[in-house]
Structures are given as structure tokens and as C-alpha cells.
Image 1: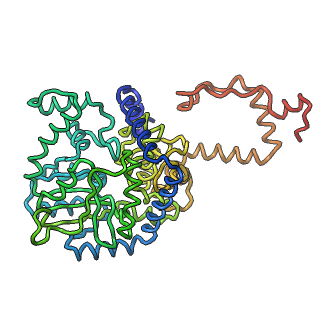
Image 2: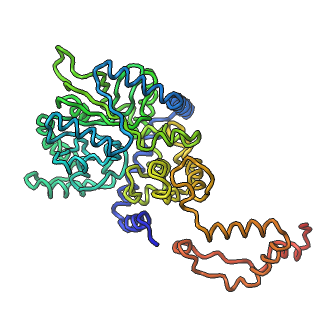
Image 3: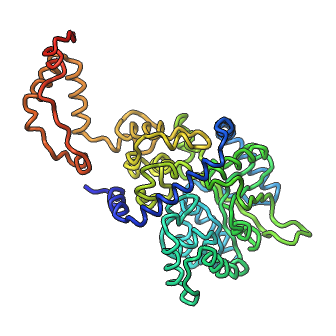
Length: 469
């Protein structure tokens, strides 16, 4: 049976242009990241510090969330809690309806993708326009993001030029990146002024001060959070940090790990709606805190490390599997190494458990993670949970267990613990090596079938006069 994931992989492996786009983009991102960390000792110190900051925040998560809500409310920001994406979407919809809003402008937000916000709101007659250039491109193409930092990274400039020419025939055809960017800016500028509501994500939510921090390069996030009268921020509950002083180290390693920049062009700090006498800013600010399975992840001492993620995408950039199959193969909001540990925990191993096989366990993702998430270890843990029926906090535990496979391993374990039986089986197998099948299903689709030796190891040693007892 061909699963959706396997179908997607086969489909994308057959697109050499997309694979070339990914290879070129990943090589560039890896090179720029490497240039930003010439001092390995400084990098490791910053990774350790960032890991400690995130681990500290998670160790106090319930208290920090309460403190965050208290300080945000004191600052005049409305706080909403949502257990599921559907609940979060209805909260956003209610705010929009309260202001009779029929359109909104969006800054980049992976949590809004997690919520399926655009599709939900459009179903209620509300026009959602992405303002981030990458998100704008894939919205025009009616595609989901293929990367959490660079959503349209799978497209070449020629792809984008053809797309713009198709959607905006009045704009002269050009493959010049600067001209394409300026064209998108002109299209979006009027939308910023007309939209009554702006929506953004959150990179860090500071409990100490009640501040929402937003990292971006294009200025669209600042426009989305400043020009419209109402600003709605959406984020996962794990994005909270304890103190404002925790932000600089995280910001430093985030930008350098994500795009190879010492710092992004814009760093926005939002602590309140517009105050009397101020000339800009929204008149009303809302924060929607989404759980969506995060509390369940939080309850497991080992899997808790997943929530340290600061969404830099470095694990994807260095992953040999992601680079070859592309982000769309995963069929999930979060692709790549972080996706294959996060998505099965959110939706269940019975839904996305197969993603845990999309790894060579080379360890590159764990080596570059700025907050030291042990991704390979967690992949193995989820693989274990998928085939075991033992008690576990992971949703869908044991759902990938196959009766025949389990019986085969039990039989092998029994035989291996009985030397006489094991030796008899080994000798029999070597004598019948010519009957060993050449077709072993998916394993031999891309590999040669293993060949059994004509003698067991013990027989070869005995013939050589080696004492092997």
C-alpha cells in the first residue's frame, strides 16, 4: 500500500528542477550560517546559553504563561486561550466580526498555517492577504509553505516571474528579483492601508514585561502590526521566555542560524496598543495562545525538548533527506527534522508516524540546532513508541506495530538465546543460500538484495584452524 507520504516523495523526486532549487538554496544557507560562526567555541557557548534559556522557560511554563497574561492585560492587550486550531480560528473570526472586517493583511506566521486560518476565514467571506513576499508567492500559486523560514524556497526566479506574469499580466515580465520585489510591494501597499485588521505571529513572548517580539526582514510585519486599527497575534504556548534579557542571545543565534544574518532588518517589540498622543500603532491588540497538543508534549520529560524549538529552520537546511525530497513531500505544516518529531506528537503516530522514517539519523540536525534539541534521539524514541504497546504519553503509541514483524523478531530473539537452534538455522540458511529471494519489497527497490554466505562464520574459522569457542 502506497501511503500519501511515499506518493509525495515519489512525485517530488521526479522534479529535477525543484531538487536543483533546493540543493542550491540549502548550500547557500549552510554556507552563510557557517560564515556567521567563525569561532566554534563562541557558537557552542551561545548554543548552551540558548538551550538553558529555553529549558528554563519550559520548566516554569505554567507560571510564566500566567505572568505573561497578567502583564499583557495590564498593558492593554487582550489575551485568548485556544486548545485546538478550530477554537483559535473561531476566536480570530469573532474579533473580525466584532469589527465588521471583511479583509485582513497577514505577516508571516507558522501558527496561522497550523490553524489553517486562511482557508477557514475565506470560508466565512473574509479575504486574507499574505504580506511576506515568500508567503505572497505561494498564496498566488495556491501552495503551502515548503520551509518554515523561506516558504517559496522551492521556486526559482523564473518560476516566480512566470507566476507574476500569469496573475498580474499588466506588470511587464521580468526575472529580476529586485523588480519582482518592487512589483509585489506596490500590489501590497494599498492593501496595508485598506485592511482594518492585521495578523502576525510571535517569535518570543516576554513574561516579565508583557512584550511580543517579532523578527522579520521586509517590514511587512511592522506594517501588519502598526497600520491596521486592530492587531491580532497568534502563537504557540511554548514561545514564552522569562525575562527581556533572555531575548538578545536567542535573537543572535536565531538570525544567524536561520538566514546567516548577524541580525534581521527589523525587530519589533509590541507591549501595548496605541497610547494617547502616539501617532501610529493599532488601537486594539489581541494575543491568541494555541495549545494544539503542546501540553501533551510538555507532560513527557524526554519529548519536552521538542518545545525548545525557535523555528530557525537550520535542521532542515542541513538535512540530506529534506534537501532531496522537499518540504511538500511531508504533507504537514512543519517539514524536515523538526517536523518529523513535532507533527507525530501533535496529531498522533497513527496519523504521521511514518514521517519518523524520513531520516538517515546522520545527526546533522542535532549538531546544528541552536537550542540543542536532540532530534535524532527523539526520532528513535518516536520510532520506538510507534511499534511498542507500552504505556507512553505519545498519541498513537503502538499504531505502527505489525503483528508479523513482531512475531519474526520474537522468533529471532528466541533462536538467538538457544545456541543449538541458532547454529542449526544458520547452517540451514547457508546451505539454501541459492534460494534467497532477490525481491524483498521496498528494500530492494533501490538496493541489491543481500546474499547469504555459503558457510557460517564458525565454519570458516574452523576451516582456518582458528579456535572460536
